[in-house]
Length: 466
Image (cartoon, rainbow, N blue to C red; front, side, top):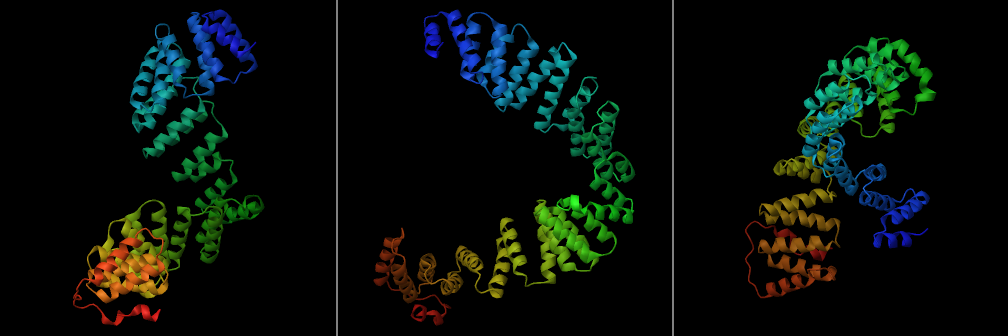
């Protein structure tokens, strides 16, 4: 019993003996997909298509992306079972990311289905493919047809409900899950999903009746304005649920409703520790600060809330409102400058980098941004000023020295350009453009320059003060 013997039989076209040898090897190594492929191939040569189909199906159980197995199964069923043929062809197109073709194949499979089981499976896959394609309404139609059958499954109801939610049809999403319960799927998953939908729909009493989740019950009690009962449950639950973010959000909601805003903020901080950078953190803070008449922090947190949710323009507007109330928050200024740059509003962004550089003279990033901007608009004199400030912060930065030399050269300030290039050659050994700067310096030695009007004389000889 050896692979070499099986291969020898196959090479000699002794297919029955080769098949027997490969089968013995497979029984010892049932996870070897190459053996399954050989058994499938030999079964086809021996005209035993049923066994071949079994082997190729086993390959797909282990590797759902195996193109050879799909192609062989399609060959097996093309004339004998159109339903299976279209299913396998649809799966092959799915693997190849050809959704449109896969959808057409599964539509044909639906038409060829002979049993309820086949019909349910084909329609379910068709619905999921339509959903992947973004055709939610057609996917809903298919899921609705699936739940008309008795032998359907729970996942169909949850998928259908979620699709209705995406289409902003909350009542329909609720109706689907209520139908699931009546159809025998009165499971915890269905009931909790239904309770959440009831809460979203403002029907907290129904949610309270359906849910078995203690945190959801507290949420319902708060929504029903049964604050004392809710807080009593929260107190008893702390040891069991104190590590869960939702517990602290509910405490924050209770304190907020009770007008205890400092305690509400403390609970928000605990929530943030358990669930970092959640939009809910910023939303809760903003609402609390509004009640405290703290407009600055309210705008700041509404800005962060919208930023996390991807609403960049709204976030910028909120941050600008905060800036009008407090113009010296460096974190806010940096955030605004960055967002405005990302929004291609570079001129406006530079106003904030300018403000940053005045408030914090050691901020290298702001100086670099301002220098690059001045260079881009041809204001080489101001570029030189910002680069000079950068140099004073980092006197060994050869890139800054080189750029400063180039700025002076563009301003026709030969003495300062020469001094910069000499400094660069002193500290920039090993840099790729070392020889280029050396050539520039040699060229400047034989070049007459008249300085541009308005360049500040006070910075001449600045290296002598280093």
